[in-house]
Image 1 (tube, rainbow, N blue to C red):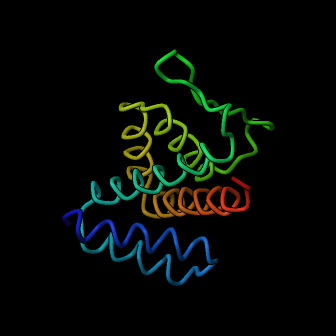
Image 2 (cartoon, rainbow, N blue to C red):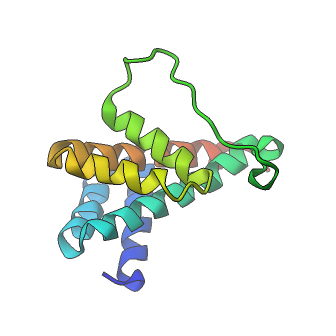
Length: 143
């Protein structure tokens, strides 16, 4: 699948998820999954994460980590062991992407893919849902 096919589907998935249109988001994800290979879905996840990164920058404004200075985005699991695996994938993938971590993102994606179709689907869906939530929050922030 080339970028001209993938980009509109990524944006459709994000837009539908932000509008709480689960069927539309599912249709876009299914088209990516059925028309491409796993690396097309990885590229879609990177597209979702790019939207999430922009949302986080708007939400946190002047408190955004300076990667060139050695700062980094981080997460803290408040109740270790209580977070569903798909949600952990979503947050870890987004943080890795935001930190320009070229090793962790693909490793997380491969692990989700190798865990089987149910976990893989839940993980990609959780990433999309988290990005949609962050994006909606960012849109509520005043400039």
